[in-house]
Image 1 (spheres, rainbow, N blue to C red):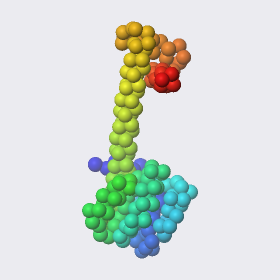
Image 2 (image 1 turned 30 degrees about the vertical axis):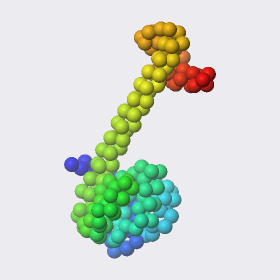
Image 3 (image 1 turned 120 degrees about the vertical axis):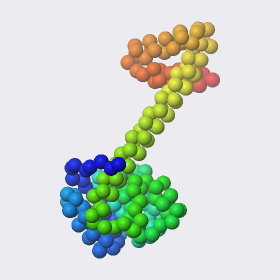
Image 4 (image 1 turned 45 degrees about the horizontal axis):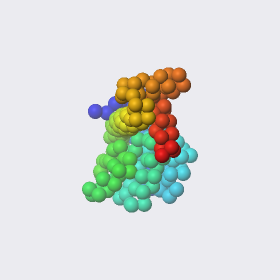
Length: 198
């Protein structure tokens, strides 16, 4: 379910067709979104998006080309923004490529001004949900890497000092407290030093 957008957004519409661009612009304006910039060509897209710094990107294409999808892929890696894409017709490959390129909402043959607000809300909501999942995944990966690092550091101390696992962890923990660092940072230093000493 999409979340209502309460504040005006800075919206970039990319559309080479002035009639379709006008429909989108009118739908956004009626939906309480007056800050709309229209770009009518797809060359140099990444630089244009960087300079405009929009909150949301809406792309309206008759048929997305491989070049446009590649630009979108570059753009979504560099500029993390919600992206909605309207197309006249699509195949499975185009949809998959668009989703991989960072498109939050892919709408086939659905450009009507009264649909613009719900699609905008869905786009932002999906983007935020994906961003939360990505953050959680990154945090879980970091926690796992840190745990492996601490385990490796404990093993190094256990071998070097002939102490138990609990004692090794306590040494790492105390060093972290004394140096005002995280346990993982101390563990990383121990592992790095052990790697240097061979």
